Image (tube, rainbow, N blue to C red; front, side, top):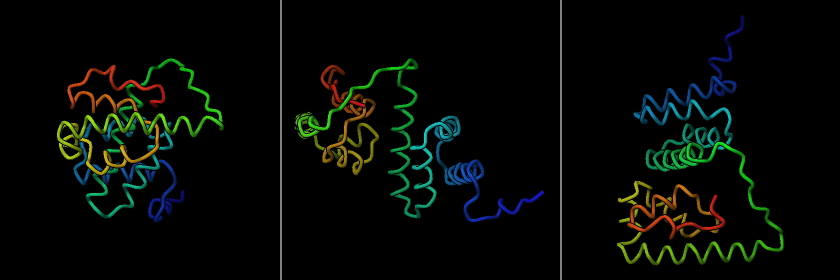
Length: 168
């Protein structure tokens, strides 16, 4: 029996996931987060990619940001309906209009954030790192439902005010 791969720099699949999870445990990542990652990382490639980024990162601040992104992904996975849901179909010629709608929505939400103390205060209230929130508001990416609900709760806004048709 050949056990050489156990000492390789990049062990195959499952062994590398175990290396990552062990390192997370050793560096004090919350047990519940590790358990959820163990449960879902084999089915969701994006989680494995983020875990790999975390593993390769030496800067503790950057690792914390990646942990926040992992938590957001897990929140999306665990809060999504279990039944199949039809996703909207995007036409290429509609992308510019969709981008404008996303920017307008985020701009209005940002105005409310600024009225209530700004990004740093929102980061404190939501537990979402300030750089992640800054990226959220400056990007053209579709907003995540879990992120919007955390923001609504922190700003004492009804969830209906953050519902948006292009939310992922």
